[in-house]
Image (cartoon, rainbow, N blue to C red; front, side, top):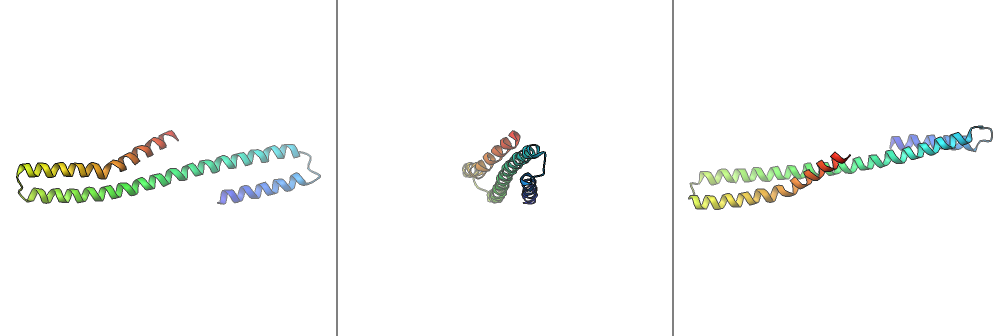
Length: 123
């Protein structure tokens, strides 16, 4: 916001000078003003890209936190299973269920992380 305000003030001052009758280098000032406008647009574009990337990173970390919570629940359930003295076939079946649950709760988070890394690498 501060950046935009400063640029707008400079543009207003430049416009005043351009409109004044006595300024001899109007063309130079006009070109400089155009360059400033282009730079402002470029900076705003980069800032919007950065904002989008930061929002995506925030979404990833929120998803990672939820996945970690789910993994902790699975770990606790795993400990309970081990302490119950279940038969090997039942334990094997439960472990397979837990394995699928782990895949389920981490797959989308891992995908979000990979997408985020790829986007960050391309910037």
